[in-house]
Image (cartoon, rainbow, N blue to C red; front, side, top):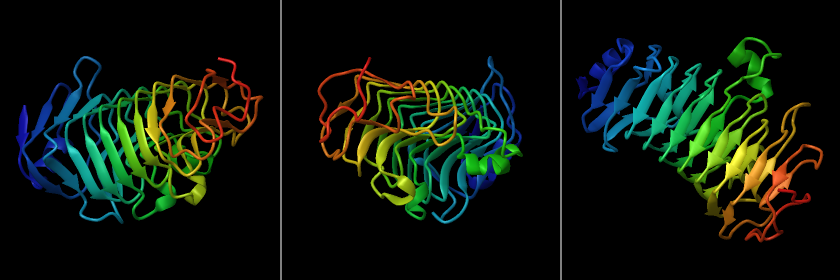
Length: 292
């Protein structure tokens, strides 16, 4: 185990991390921009852990990432990331688990799985108060990249950001100016389960008006609950042919403050499956027929 108690020591520990290593943060403020290109393995992930009182920050909501990982097979556990332009950003970081963290007071998105960051997990965490500098880009959890960013992220406008099979489970996501979870076109096979959303998607900027917006394929959205948003609890969009398909919604609970539908779907031809039942959304369960 590597014990870390200063910003300088954290920079060194991240740079020299190796498979199976545990980096343990002492309580305190770590001010700077922290990242690593090191990778663990399936049998020996790299672990970065600390209490909620171990706080990473760039010192401003206008620039920098609180934590930026470009290597795979990490476990990030327990820490706080705050006062940064973006919270935790994964680029090409496959099989990385983020668990029990607090990410809040962020200029744009809180947690971003990007650049082919597939098979990742964000769980048991608190994500809050995002988009304080850029409200239209203040997602709580952002999966993939919009098609307009594929060239920058993947090197070609024709190559999707396949941040596939990302699991978002058992988090509390609140006061996000953009969606609580935004799953972009080009991503497939993720699940969004057991989360609580409060006042997520409230700004209306850049079409941010729901707890969750699914633009990818084959997502399971189940067992979530919450209250308050600008329009709908869940939305399904097809912004590119072949995307926004075959998503499933079941056992979600709207507790109030949703003026639109529980599940709004751009077209009934997208293969969306919605379990029927009563809904706490003002306009009911969905604008399309429920077939689940």
